[in-house]
Length: 332
Image 1 (tube, rainbow, N blue to C red):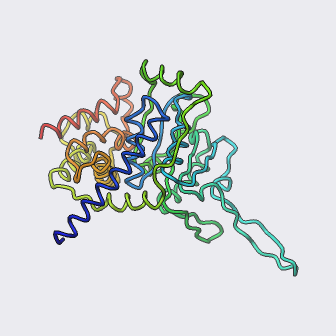
Image 2 (cartoon, rainbow, N blue to C red; image 1 turned 180 degrees about the vertical axis):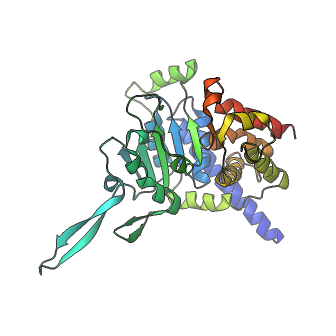
């Protein structure tokens, strides 16, 4: 790369980083006390992935997704998942029509998945058959109906909300579909001060309103730029060490061998690579560090691993195990 090209690339990164920072600030003016959640959602979208939001009802998961759609300038739609929802209700279906001459033909009517930002609200309320209808769309960017492929708009992102599986009427997502989400973002109760801001600013006549900060073209330019962010060898090695140490078959950690039923696959390594680049760009840096990998380990890995029965019975948790893996990587 010539000196002029390098300077141009740096200028592009700085411009995009400024737009993304502005977007983050715009979302946080609406969503109080969830800075880390907002950051992780933006990182996922910048990396071109999908987000699984998990939390009890009433923590503004729906509001967060709606706000992201407005701020990022994306065409967004919402689907409320229920036990009687059918796959055609999501992807669309063909209907038989007749023209003026009496000729019959099938016409495809698009479902709500044909948008740029799909909110799958309470995705684990629907049956596994309906959940799987999103699988092809999330991975391949198109859907197939009656043997015909229908491409989805670009960019395309799914932000799914999920209630804790302990609640009544939920269907746990299968491992194959969980792996399609780049991150699992856990939303917790707000702090005292954040909840104070919520009740003061959202219960009056002057509640804040989301405003666009960029458009879909800017977002796609940012996503292309993320793939150009250089990654050092130390970061690549940290990713490989972290992911491979979480697999019982390839680790030398006895804790993993004793407690993990199945570990993260290569898609976890890809997710860490892309999300680390996106985090660096979001924070105005020109390349990621090992700290980015460690900061994103939990949201990237926790839905791609499972503890065995004995580990769960003994009270062990995945977050604690992932923290152990991170300490090992950080120690070199």
